[in-house]
Image (cartoon, rainbow, N blue to C red; front, side):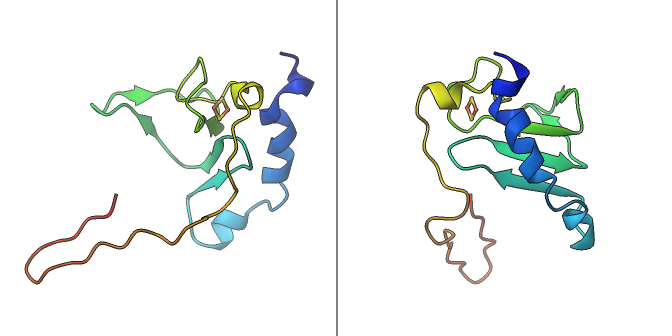
Amino acid sequence: MAASDSPWSARQTSVSAAPGLGKSLGMTSMIIPYEDGPLVVRGDFELRTPDGARIDPGRGTVALCRCGKSAIKPFCDGTHRLVGFRAGTGRDTPAPRVESSPGRESSAA
Ligand code: FES
């Protein structure tokens, strides 16, 4: 795939449309769901396997696959376009709420 065909490089421009936004909000990282595409992560972050091993992102901003079809998971390789993956850019449904009981910590997944 040519660099100009990459959904990643084309959409990275959109991420840069608001430079410094995360820092102005006091955040150290931002995760941005792209329409019909990956989750773009930028800022200070670490990628780790479930057992804690560090995954080298190779760059400061990464696109994480959310279609499940990438050959280089957890990173996006652009396959989402080939498989017709569809997803919105924001929350389509309300956040799950977990009722907490007195004396018991709640956790939402
Ligand atoms: S989101 Fe891009 S390959 Fe899965």
